[in-house]
Length: 318
Image 1 (cartoon, rainbow, N blue to C red):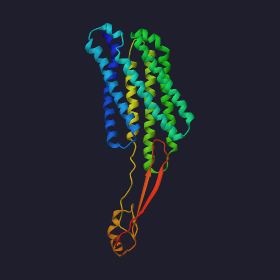
Image 2: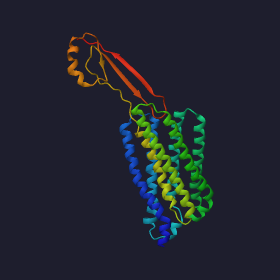
Image 3: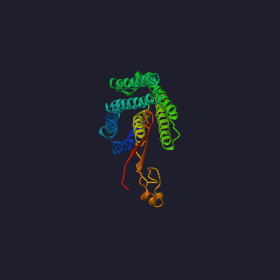
Image 4: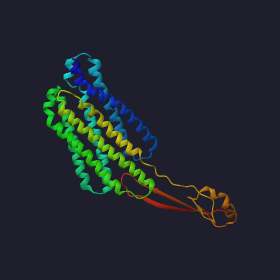
């Protein structure tokens, strides 16, 4: 009995604990997003809310599945041979989250590259991968016994998770290529792009590594459900990477710090230590000061950089 419980529940239990930990990170990231980027477009805010709701339901179903086996039916070994409905339902939600995040990253590639054939190929691969995942989950409802389920989904399970690793790696690699091409030589913009490059590489590497581990565990441990722990965690990694990429953005700000007039010209970027030295010039000057504003806005989602100078002439009586 102990060996059966360990082989069946060790993977799901560890996955549930890691899932709850990562769910706390997702809640923190979501709260920060709503505090800092409340003026984003409605479609982006709706997508963030949609992913957070799905992650909440996913976490609740994961906890319910562990509670079903270890608390509600404690000591009932016969129930361990069957999958409770909460497990495949949580996997369905996980595949939907992964598909939504993949489409978001693919849309970002479209904005950066302006090449539709690349995004169409990636979107087709992501759709096929999601189709394999949903098909495997639907089969678990028809074949709730683990042994029978494994016999029916063996080929689709391996192909689906191998394709998952390929899709995640391809999206991360393509994003890195076009983000590097967007470097402008400006320290602020390049630092943001470097952070995005780091997030893209880490996201693709971690999610691909999880997919590879799922395949390895599924093939090497036929009587063990250790692979389920990595399946549970992967959806959280997608949501964390998506929210991290949103929270990395720097909100456009306009510099409007005006120094005292130097021979009638007020320059926004002049340091304040010129105040004492130019006070005599300001008193004797009769020229209208000119306030120069320079704003640089870079959309990390792929729009071209917008660099503009807004010069406004203000007349004053001296």
